Image (cartoon, rainbow, N blue to C red; front, side, top):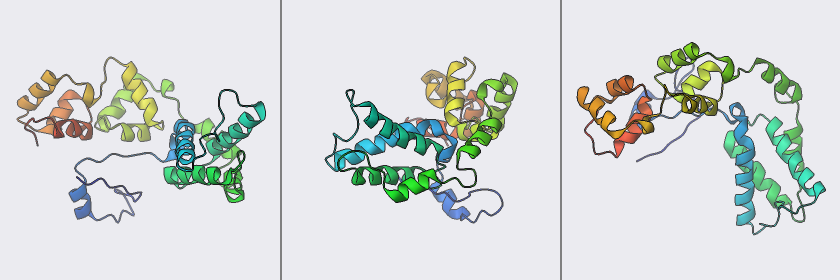
Length: 233
């Protein structure tokens, strides 16, 4: 199996990704939003990368513990706050590199290297506080989207969560939460085995048709079927 990733446009105007290569690789495509579009994950990812870097460099005592002083905690909180304000054009790789640079520079206590500090504090384009306020003013909240619009977005996008989130202007996590809270929607992994087998048999192994009948994502259904031992195409 080959797992590959790209930030190149795969559809629409300006797409220069080779179709033959895409079809060779694209047995299962998973669309991921830029890091800036799911900021709720930035804090957890930053802590993860800091922890990994501390462990690799033998500085596990660097991160504050339960008995850390107020100043130490405030210093780390400042770093996390700056990271939440930043737009992360380099996505997760840039966040991981930033965490690594901070750990390398922090020999006694937390120390943010000057290039990192300048980048995180830069107010340009929509990357600063003013931009964040503008985004908050225009961002949609999923609770403001009624059931009819949510259902239509799911149907129009073949129940592919990333595409639904993009159309509605919300995060993938918000879509997952909405589906999890609803008795009317489910993920491919939540379909009972007997129901799945019946749907495939009815459609003579056609996974696309079965996904439509089950009202689940085709890519997720294919992932489940790949190791199921069932006959499908």
